[in-house]
Length: 232
Image (tube, rainbow, N blue to C red):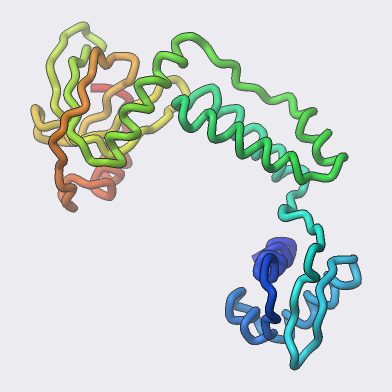
């Protein structure tokens, strides 16, 4: 664990607590030695973090103290901003809105220089109408994956042939040029990847399936590692 991450977790362990936490409790929580806790607390105190207490008694964050809850370096921050932009452009509406809310919360507690840095990132992922249509479909499929509902839809292959499929949805995957739905297809009795832009009108069935090891996520991931494919 990086030291910056450990200091962040140490502050979080003390945040919002009215009673002292001993060095032993903090060491157990962070999986480090008590000596490391003593050293980290002293460094935080010297840097202005209002931690009160001492060895043998315990430590507490001064009541009412304002301590920024996030510690990101410039590269980490830019990665978060770019990630939020890509989610907004390529994922469903629900995740896109959630990513924007998360970014607002992050920027609200950043120092001015880091906030300006996040606004200067020049990596973008412009949205398109087709992605917006796929996003609506993704929201439905994402919910079906979470609730394990069967899904039924018409599917058109690359050669133009169509068929009606009933599938057990497993996951959504982005391949850079297209999203696919990883699923166990009951028609073909095996794993298949369905491109979202080739799926016709879909129906989320009321029937809930039971996922077993033979056709669950782990086996599906094994199958695409052996034969990666973006369509059937």
